[in-house]
Amino acid sequence: MSAPSRPTPETQPVRKPVLPKDAVVLVVEDNVSNFVLIARMLGFMGIRCEWKTSGYEVVEYADTLPRIDLILMDIRLPYEDGYGALKKIRSSERLKHIPVVAVTAEASLEQMNKAKQAGFDGFIGKPLDPDRFPDQIRRILAGEAVWEMS
Image 1 (cartoon, one colour):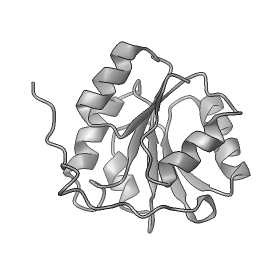
Image 2 (tube, rainbow, N blue to C red):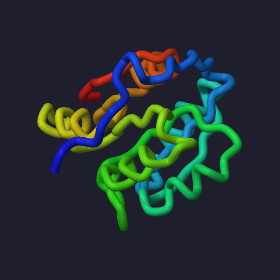
Image 3 (tube, one colour):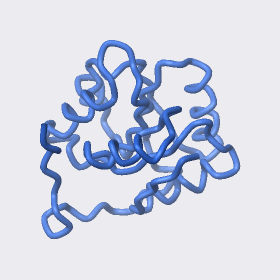
Image 4 (cartoon, rainbow, N blue to C red):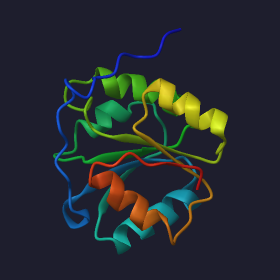
């Protein structure tokens, strides 16, 4: 199975930096404790977040949101994993250019490379570091690719 075609730097639209106070982040996470931690850290930054517990129907849900600037996607999800959800997001005309960052407990170089090949825009390993997470999110919203184990 080949990797999905990704826009080249020449064809990909330039993402405008988004200020945290203006950002809306969709968190796709099935573990309530993990979501609460992420939501609190995002809230502390002034970021509004939405929540979906599975990759299943994530595109349909995201389409109901008037604005979405970033999707933080767990890879191991019930019903449909993060890879399946990413394929659907990339096939959506409205969502295909939204950055999607894998956030996973399977934090290894192998998983990071697999996420990169699948077309994720970044990777943050769990456990999340509350001291580093805000900076990671700011950098992503500024248009920087973040590929870090934790």
